[in-house]
Image 1 (cartoon, rainbow, N blue to C red):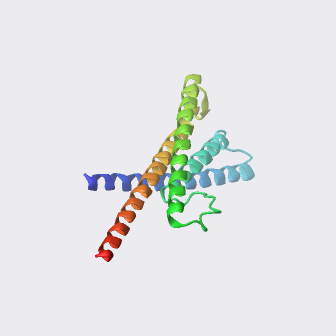
Image 2 (cartoon, one colour):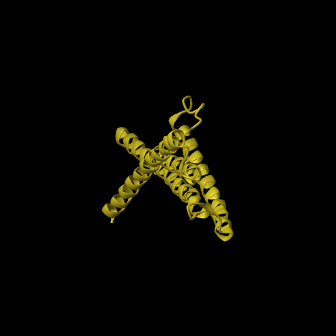
Image 3 (tube, rainbow, N blue to C red):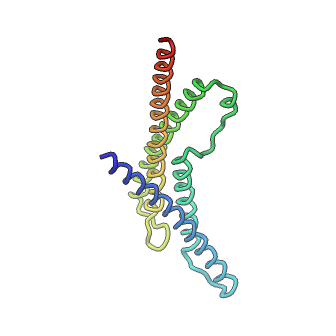
Length: 175
């Protein structure tokens, strides 16, 4: 069972990396093509500008997921350098938990937003509905929320294991 979970998680990480690279290269290619078509042929792909805006949204959201997976997101840590390790871990656990709650809240409201867009039935470009272009928003925030929730609980678990190890070391030293 654990092997299946690890394989599934690795598959998700690989998919995330692939999507980020795909949208990045597709954006570069489409933007470059649009420039060449406009400069040399006084023409362009009529839906390319809208597609590029959507691709930037997807790159941003997948990039945020990518940063959150290795805990390399933007973090304000003015005090963490000066705090004791135990307090620092508790603060990180709390901030990860709050980050998870905020991500889930944004995901909830973005799902409602997507439902409104679906009901509206507008087209973004080339017969692609607007709601589909925006579907990355709740998905990314759910993934980031799950990651931050797991980071907060895993940090708690690591801290408890370290505390148990410290207690066993002191009890063995006392004997």
